[in-house]
Image (cartoon, rainbow, N blue to C red):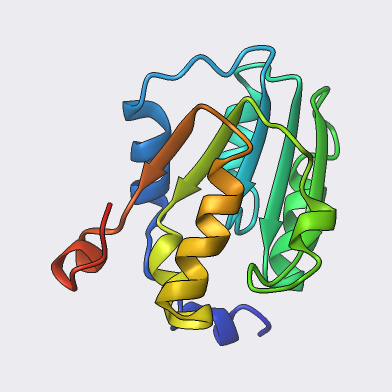
Amino acid sequence: MWWSRFKSGFAGTWDDRLDGLFSAKVDYAGKSILDVGCNMGVVAYEISKLKPSSIHGIDIAKPHIQTAKMLLSGSPVHARFDRLNLGSRRLGNILLPQYDIVVLLAVYQHMQRNIGPGKARRVLSNIVRRTSNVVARVHRNAVRRGIPS
């Protein structure tokens, strides 16, 4: 099955992602959302129930992006999903200049592992500059390994 390739690299659980989503007590209504590391769109789907103006999801796995597109295909919320490695030079062309909220749930450790700590910090800075509101959750194992939250 296609998902088995990604299973071993998945450090954050759905509970991690959804707990971060709801424990932040953020008002998503009418806001533009960037979901970095959107996976299969479950978080985007849950956010769509809160009536944001738009959701833009980014993930590296093509099957995840296809699933996210299908999951939100019936949603009244404008949703866009792009397959992209966060280390890609195309990132600046894919991202909008501004988002109301950026969601980073259990993704930073993947960034560090895949593109290196220095580039991960630069990419994250580029993303965070596009908003004043960040909803983030670092997986507890990442914190134990010394990755900042």
